Length: 509
Image (cartoon, rainbow, N blue to C red; front, side, top):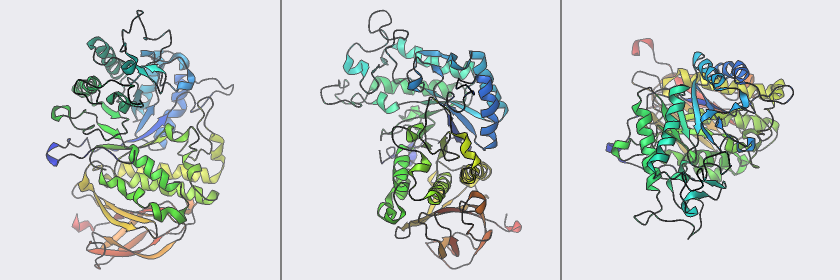
C-alpha cells in the first residue's frame, strides 16, 4: 500500500525503542552460498563465511528467512511444519545454535522469520491432526488460506494459541534468538484478507477484524517483552491497522517495529522511472514523511522485491550500466539517510543482476568487476556511518529528529533534509539529486553557519562514480534559506546522495 500506519495522538504514542542502529542483512541460508557440487552448506560452514562477511559489511543483525522445518524448498521456509525444529537441511539443532552463537560473538544480533499466519496441509504437519479440524477452523471461510493453499490456525482456541506462543518463546529461550519477524501479519488481522464477498465470515461485531488473531498477537508481544531479555518483534504488516507498534496496555498490538511497505513501494516505483519523468512522481519521495513517525518503522528491501519478475534493485534502475549503478548508489544513500531502521536482502549489497534463485547461490563472481565492488563499498560505508553517527539512528522513530530542507524542487528532482541526534550531537544534512545533471552552486539552507564536512558522496570515484563533489567540506554563511538561519552553495553530483555533518568548534561543544 502507498500509506503507512494510522496516526495517533502524542499522548498515546509508544515510548521510542532503544536508540540503537538496526541494519539487518536478510539471508536465505540455502542460497547464500552452496557447496561446489551444488549441495547445501552445513550450519557451521554457513557460519564460517556469513558471520565474518556480515560483520565486515557493518550490518548490526542477520535476519534468517524461516529455518523452521518445512517440506518444500520452493516455499523458502514459509510453509512450516516443525514449529520447534531447525531444518535438518543444514545439520542438527546444535549446529544452528553454534551459528547463532558465532553471530553473537561477532557482535551481530539474530532475527528469525517466524510464521504463525498459516500452516501447510501436508500429511506430516498439523492439519487434520486427529482427523478433525483440531488446529484450524473447521469452516474453510476462516480455516483455509486461498493464496497459499494452506490451513489457518484457530487463534481463538487457547490450546492452539499456546502451542504457537510456546514455539515463539522456544526460539528465544533455547537458541537465544534476539528478535522475531512475524510474517504476513495483515493476513492474520483481517477475516476478508484476499477473499471475495461471501467468502469470509464477519466477527461478532459484524466487522472484518480477526479479534482472536489480534488478541493472540497482543499476548505474543506481551510475553516476548515480558521475558526481560531484550528480545524485540517486527511485524510484516502492510495496511493501516492502527497502533501496530503501540504498547498493548494502551490498545496497540505491541510490536517493536513495523515494516514500512508504503515507503518501499513508493520509492522503488520512483527509482524505476527514467529521470526525465521523475519530476511527475516527486510525491513518491516525500509522501512517506506524512506517516513516517506514526509507527516505529523499518525500511525493507527484502526478498519479496527481487522475485516474480520484479528484477533486482540494480536492474530496476533505468539507463545504461553507469546510470544503473549510480542510481543504486544514490538510492542506498537516500535509504540510509532516511528515518527508520534498515533491511537489505542478500546480493543487493553488491548489485545482483538476476532475480534471486532459491535453488542456487548468489552470483559472487560479479565482485570480480569494479562497479559491483563499488556498490558493495557504498553499503559498507553507509553501515559504518549509520552505526557511528547518532544523528542517523538515535531518533529514527521521532519526528523531532527530522526536518525537511528541500521538499518541493520537483523540477530538478532534488530533495534534502536534516537528521538530528541527541542534544550535543552534530546534525547531518542529506541531499539527493535524482537526475544525471550535475547541479553547481545549489543554494541550500542549513541550521548553523560554519564548516560542514562532506562525510559521504555516492558519486565518489572510489565507488565508481564521476568523482564530482565539494572537496571534502562546505562553508555555510549567515545567509538564511529554506527557513534556516544559514546556507551554503553546494555541488550536487549526477545521480547522487551526499551527506554533510556539521563540525562545531571545540569551544562550542
